[in-house]
Length: 463
Image (spheres, rainbow, N blue to C red):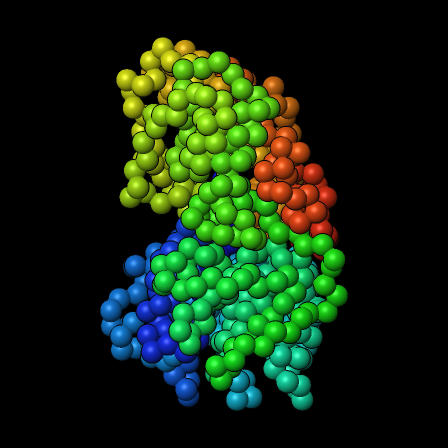
């Protein structure tokens, strides 16, 4: 089981080509999900939509962007499924109509009280169209809306959910962005001219040439209407945020700013910390591209070892971890990387990797390097061992499938076929991101900020 992340979100307010800009934003965020994509616009009277399975460039064409998706307000979503099957009916943004409200919602994250809430809502008469936890927000909002302002109803609905969620919503002529009280998943605000932009990462703003203003704060809801932006706050916001540290280690694009951190420089710091903790005599260091590249740059600079690209990536193959089926992931692994043979034979090599989940993919790559005559193979990993599953939107395996959850570092070293293996210490990681109290470390420590409901948790801890 490889590691996967949930979704990417984009919203545009007050632009004559809102759908086209959302398309560009989703294109920039394609690394966050490759199963499906959707764009919804508000044309002043109704919602218009185009959703489909596949990559952004496969789902939309010029006709959609120039003729069908009319309107100056738009939201978009790219997805891979953390809850809910990979089916067309589960493609977001999710759309509904009730009592004069036209609503579209896109969700990044996972709720941890899904089973309980769904049963309660079904007992009250709610009819679910999808298997996504994202739809729960819509039904809760419908129950809370009677006689309330839209903003008040959303805040009341969010008080009943637990877990990770960043949302973009289009409710009639309002564009709304919202983060959960712990701030697990990212969401940023930008602007160009009189247009506002919401996006999961700043790389989407860069492609639009929009100015980055700030991140949406944990527990904050921004409502953009009639050219103005207003902020509201959810109930019971914790004093300490718990942003997902894997956004910094792996998921975010290196040219983004996420949680106020420059991703490129942060990953370099992780590599430098690795070199300080566990340097080794070798001929050069190398990454398995693209995930280990920036930590490898830092490792090389700190250790003084040459940096080499001795493994070449086929850039026409998508990120293997984000594919929806194991067969597709295995196929992607075979096609994705190819070694430079003359760089391998009789060499002592330090390989920099960002993480190890099951270890099977890395084991296959190490075996190939051995066959090509590598003399020594050492691995340095830019995060601590992943011992516990994630409940908040990363599809880490159940604990039974996490290699570090059941084996020692020495056992993992032997299984993969390495001469040495070292994981970055938790202190080394936290020094690289300049903070201990701001991040969720549950996958390393088992200390979860929000405990999942019993039925939900059993799925993850099943051996």
